[in-house]
Image 1 (cartoon, rainbow, N blue to C red):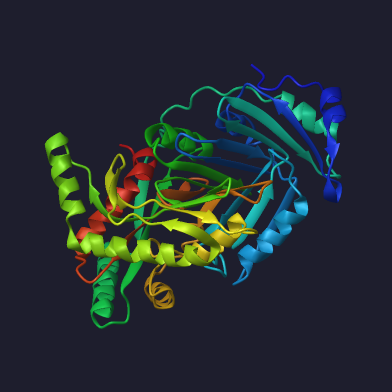
Image 2: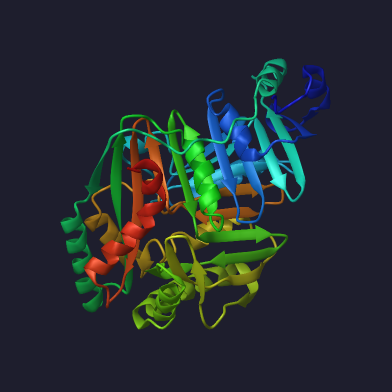
Length: 439
């Protein structure tokens, strides 16, 4: 059944001219954003998806406009480029970025920039009860051809659970090397060189068959409804995940950030689950780790906001496999603030980097033996009012053919135990491993 019933004449006549030769049109639609992306991801140059827990979702196909940037000014440059598009309401641009300012540096990430913003040619936006098709046509694209491609999209069936045949797993670095790195980090913290540092590891899964990235996003979204689900496909590689952590939301002048730090596994039953939660809430080690992150986020939001509200005590955020200490920080943005100004100020938070920031980043560069790429960077969207939402790219993986690179990390503080931190990374890897390496 076709998702879109527009006639070519309707599309052409309804478009309004914008800057840079772009033409914009808005149409009601019955389809869901993720179904739209799954139906057309193999028919367009790029495919993009982002959804918020109990909030809006957007799915985009094709590239009407794109901007990339790298280096210390990457977010400022990206802001300038997106501003030039003069997006009308209710259009959205997708944006994503790497952990490091100089961007991905290894072959698996070859198609991903340090920071990138994309205005799709066709986007489905779910906002409340509304479902809208947003069309942006660049000067070199034939409107009739675009309409034909859109009309050909059929609502896809619910994806089956992945069955990828035999598979192999490779830890990078090896488990022993990673725990040695944790011990080195603890020693550096006790020497006073650091207060906290996040060390990450990667697991590479090789399978007989190649998974479809947006089918995996569909499974992740249903299983982890409290998370921000995302997918970004370019040149055959797809970055997917279901992140529990909001970097920043900017909505009608209100700014929200929800740092998570300090983690424990979920219990097998209600009694054990409650015991583990109580232990986490009362853990001096985890409370210290969490406080470092909250203090840093509040300090960095300060110059861009007013009426900053920082709760004195963390709450508990329970996910399917792990539970976190959580603090929701809120404020009001000062006039002229852009969502990318907030991203620039906050990234990387100590939840993915460490503190002090410079010392932690130097230690990560020395100890980690793989390229984080967009892992522990961010994915989100920007709207016509310069507002938007970004999640930290966690619980994620980069898919390229039959190979998948999965990522997880743990925050190391003075009282960290290498074996306990290793267990934490295994818990964080489970959402992706359960889909790609089921036996």
